[in-house]
Amino acid sequence: MLAGLVEGRAGWNRLPVIVLLVVGLALVVVFVAVERRIANPMLDLALLRRPDFVGATVAALAAGAGVLALMSFVPTLIERGLGGGALVAVAALLAWSGLSAVTALGARWLPPSVSPRVQLVAGLIRCAAGQLALVGLDPGSSIGRLLPGLLVAGAANGVLNAALGRQAVASVPADRAAMGSGANNTARYLGSAIGITVVAVIVTRAGAAPGAVGLLSGWNVAALVTAGFSLLGALTVLLARERVAEKSPASTPTLRAQATDIAPRHIERLRHRSSGKACRRRPYGARCPEELERKNGFSGGIDRTELQPHEQEHRRKSRRHHGRE
Image (tube, rainbow, N blue to C red; front, top):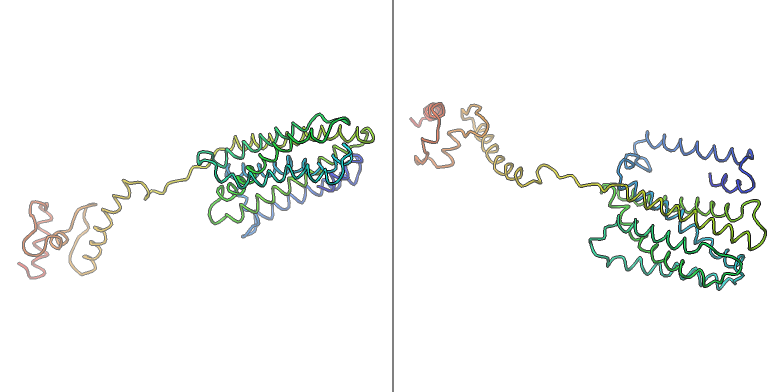
C-alpha cells in the first residue's frame, strides 16, 4: 500500500498504482483471516471489542500520521523552501524533539485526576494546534516563523507519548500487556509511514508550481491534512468510553460475609458425614444435632430449645446408636 501511495504521485490512474493498492488491501484481509484462525495470533482481534484499546491504538496511529509525519519533513522545508542550511534545520527540529523529551519525563508529575485518556485527547488537540500554527508559509517567511508551532507541538507530543505507553498496557488484560504495547507501537510506526507518504505526495504533487513556491504551497496543505489526522484521533479517543473494571461476586462485603459464615458450616457437615455418623440431609443452613453437640461440648451443654421436634428425635436415635442412651 505504501508503494502504491508513493507511485501515485505521478498519477493515480496508472496500472502499477492500482495493482499495488489492491494487493496491499488483499494482504490486509488475508492477515485478518489468518489471525482469527490460529491459536496464538500476533494480534488478538478480540481486543478490538475493547473501546479503550481501540482509542489508544487510534491515538498512536493519529500521532504517527499527524505530528510525526509533518515534523519529519521540516528539514526539507527549511533547506528547500526557506533557504536555510543543514545546521539551521537541525536546530529547528531540535526545538521540537528536545522539548518533547522533556515534557514526556515531566508527565509523571501530572495529578492523578488527569487520566491517560485525558492526556491523549489533550495531547492530540495541542499537537493539532501546533501543526495549524505552521500553516501560511510563503517564500518571504523567516525560519523563526516556525518556532511557535514547533514548540507547541513538541510539548504536546511529549505528554502524548507518555500517555500512549501507559494506556497501551492499561487497556488490555494483564496477560496481553506485551500484545497491547506491540500493537500500539506498530500503529504509531504504521501511521508515520502512511503520514510521511501522504505529506510527500501532497508537497511534491504533479502540477504544483516549481521551486520554493510550489513546495511551500504543498506544505501548507500537508499541515492542514496532518492536523486533521490529529483531531480525528482526539475525537476517536473522546468517544471511546473507558472500560469499567468488573467486580467479582466475592469482592462485595455482603457476599464475602456470607461466604465466611457458610463455609465453616459446610466443612463441619462434611466432616461429620465422613465420620460415619447418621446425619440426614437438612434444610439449607440447619445444623445437625451432632454438630451442635460438638459445638457446645458433650457435657450436656446443648440447648434443646434450639432443636426442632424432628431434630430432637434424630438426636435421640443418634445417641442410642452410639450407646449414649
